[in-house]
Image (cartoon, rainbow, N blue to C red):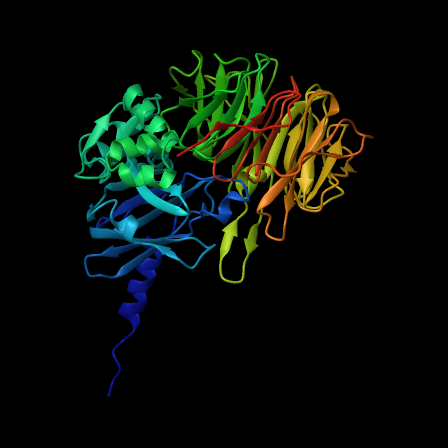
Amino acid sequence: MRLPSLRPLVRELGRLALLLSPLAGHAADVPADAGLFTARVLTNASSTSRGTFLYFNQWETLTLQDASKREVEIKADKAGGNNSSQVFEAVLPAGKYRLLHMVSPRTPTRVGADLQGVIAEFEVRPQTVTSLGTLIYQPTGNQGYTILCDGFDAPQIERVRLNYPTLYQAQAEHAPVRPCVGNEVAARASQALQGRTYVLSNSRMTSVVGTATLGVIQALIEKASATEAIQAWKAETDPQKRLSMARSSTYAFNATRMLDSGEVLAGSNLGQLLVREPQGSWQRLDTGDTREITALLADSRQHILAAGEEGLLMQTTDGGKSWQAISAPTHGLIVNLARQDKRFFLLAIEGFDAVLYGTSDLQQGPWTELRREVNAREEVKLPLATFFRTPSLTASGWVIGGRYVMVTSNGFVNSLNLKDESWTRTKTPFDEPRGATALRNGSLFAYSKNKVYVSRDQGATWTRDEMGCMKLITAAYGLKGQAYNACGQGAFVFSTALMQRSGDAAPWTTLSDETPTPASALFASEVDDTLLFMNPEGLIYGRAPGAKDWTLERKPL
C-alpha cells in the first residue's frame, strides 16, 4: 500500500506559516488571493508593574476562526513599540472570519465570549486591508472587564503604507474593510490624525462622528461617583456612552510634571492628558487618539507637546481645545521629549533598541538619528510563556548640565555633549537601571531591583540612596531635597506606607503609616510641597502642603 505524498501538505503548511507571520518592518507583497488583517488590542489599565496584578496589559495571541471552523492563531508583533497595546497583523487567505479568543502570557485564561460579542463575522477580501481598529480591554471594577470597539486605526494604516506600499496604493480602488465602523467612515484614519475624536458603536455596525456632548459625559461621571464602578458599567449599555466612560476613566499616570503655574500634567491611556489645577481639581484633555501618552514637553498649559505609542506625536497651542498631528521620525514607542534652545530631542523604543532623534524644526524636520543603543531591552522568559518588560521603563532621557543623557535598562548611560556633539558611553555600577528621572537641580535618580541610585554628574557616577525600606514600590524627589518613598507592607504588598526624608543626611521618618490604598505611582513637586500618588485602579490621592491627611482627588469608573 502506497502512502499519499506529503508534499502538498508540507507546501500548504509552509504557505500558511508565511501568511500568518508578522511582517512589520519588511516591505512585502500580498498574494492575489489574500488580504491583510490588522487589529490593535489596547488595555485601559495601569501600566505600572503592580497594575498588571489585576488586569493583563500584555496580550500575546489573537485567534480567529475561518469559515471551515479552523483556528487561525496570530502572534503580537514583537518589534512594535507599544506600551499598553499590542498590534496583531497577518496576511490571510480571502474569506469569512470570526474573533475567537485572545491570550495573555500572564494567565492561562482565555478571553473569548466577550471578544466574540464585539464584532460579528467579518470578511477578508483579496488585495484589501481588513482593519478591526482598536479593541479596548476595559476594567469594570472587582476584577471584571468588558471589550469595547473603537474604529481608530491610523497607526495600522501607516504600517500598511510602510510595509505594504502596493496594497496601500490600491486603497483607492479597494477601500479598507472596517467591521467596527461599517462603511460609513472611510476617511477616519486621516481625519483622526488631525485631532478629531470619534465615538464609535460596536453594535449594529453604526457609527457617530464627533464626541458625545459634554453634558452626557458629565452625567456619566456624576452617575459613577454615586455608584460602584461595576454597577455603572452594567447599567450603561449604549456603546457610544461606554466609550466615553472609558475615556473618562483612564489608569496610566505617565511623564508627570508640574508647570511653573502649579498645574500638574500627566499622560494617560486612550490619548488622554490629565491636568490638575493648583487647588486639586482634575481635568481631562482628549487628543482624539487612542494611543497611550508616555512623554510630555510643555512650557505652559497652552503649549503642550505629547508623544507615545506607535509614533504618536501631537501638539496643542490653545490649552487642549484642538490638537495637531506632527510627523514623527519613528513608529516605535516615544518615551521622552526634550528641548535645548530651538533643538528638539525625541527618544523612542524601536523593537529592542533605544533610538535618539534630533531636529531644529519640529514642524518640517528633518529628524536625524543621533544615537542607537542596540538591545536596550530584553525578553523575559517565564516557564510557560514569554512577555516583554514594560517598554516605557526601558529607556529615559533628559537634557541636564549641557548634555543629553540617555539611560537604558541594559545598564548603559549614553551622554551627548551639546556643545561639541561628542558622545560618551559608560556602564552603570548596578544592574538594570529603569525609570531614570532628572531633577531641576541637575541630579538623576534611577530604580534598580528595589533600590534607588543617584547621579550628580550627568550619569557619569552613581551612588546608592538608602531608602530605609525593604519592599520599595516607588520613590520621588521634591522641593528642597525632600525625598519620599512608598514602601510595601505585608507578604503580598496589599498596603503601602509613605516615608519622608528632609535632606540627604537626614533620617527617614514615617509620613503615613498606611496610605488609604496601595500606591503604585508617586509624584512630588519641585515647585511646592504638592504630593500625589496613584493606585493600580487609577485613584489619585493628594496631600496639601503641611497636611498629613490624604484627599481623594480623582476616581475613574
